[in-house]
Structures are given as structure tokens and as C-alpha cells.
Image (cartoon, rainbow, N blue to C red):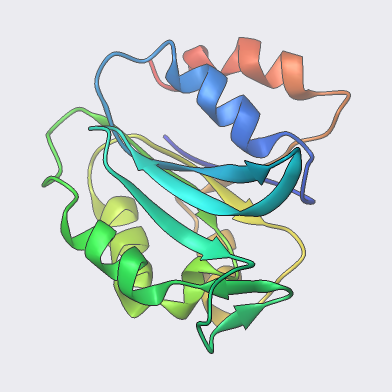
Amino acid sequence: MKILLTGPPRSGKTTLLARFLETVPDKQGFVTEEILDNGKRTGFRLISSIGQTATLASIYSDSPVRVFRYGVELHELDHFIDSLPPIEPDNLLYLDEIGRMELYSEKFKKLVLKYLAADNPFIGTITSIYNDDFVREIKSRPDISVTEVTESNRETLLDQMPTYFK
């Protein structure tokens, strides 16, 4: 089974994914976490299943690659991807998020395709507000189930997820 969770920013996609991953023993991939400074979001950090971290984007960055007020740290993203372990058979693969910032990286796109081509089960999050050819291609794959996350269905989805990956 390969599932993509979609929805607008702050709909709970990452939280839902993280809560589900707490129940899965054999997994590999990464999640994106907000970086907060005095309660205000100033950037995004990647955290891998083996504890590696990298800054994806920051309002303090001088990167010329910008998404709104955030400078995207492509070098850090690419280095982070290079340091991920090889795919282990039967592990649940996960990615958070297939989004505009990440899609500036060709290495990230290759990782997405590699994870989706693997025989492993897969769950990820994908943007609902940004579309390009890559996003449309991923969402339209016949082996992918795209599920919208809303405030009203988050708990139901969390309860259903274990049955999808048995």
C-alpha cells in the first residue's frame, strides 16, 4: 500500500503522520518539523528515522531560493538525503513533505521516486496548494491512494491507518 496524505498547511498532515509512525517499529524516512522562536515559526527542520537533522528552510537564510519568507537550504537538504540509509526490505517508508521547498532539489525528487518504486509500503504527505508536473505525476500514479486530511477526519484516519499496512 502507498498512501499520500494531502491538505492545506496546518491541516494536521504531519501530526497525523508522526502519530501513526509512533506505532510502527520498522520504518525509515523523515519528517519535517517547524522551528519556533518565541512561539513564531522561523523555519523547518528535517528529522530522519535514525535521528539525523538538517535545516530545510529559515527566515534567517540568505539562500537565493525562496518560498515566501523562507530561504531554502538546498545544500543541507541534498546532504541530508545523501546521508539516509539504504532501503531495508519490509520497512515502512515515509516522507514528510512532498512540497514546494523540497521540490527545488533534484535529489529529493529522485528519493521520492525511489521510495515509490520500492516494494515497501509507503506513506507520505504532499502539498495541496502547490502544483507542478512532478506533483501532478505523483498524485496521479495508479499505485497511490491520495487521502485528504481535515480537522474532522484526522482521528478516524489515524484509527484506520494500521489496517492499510497489514
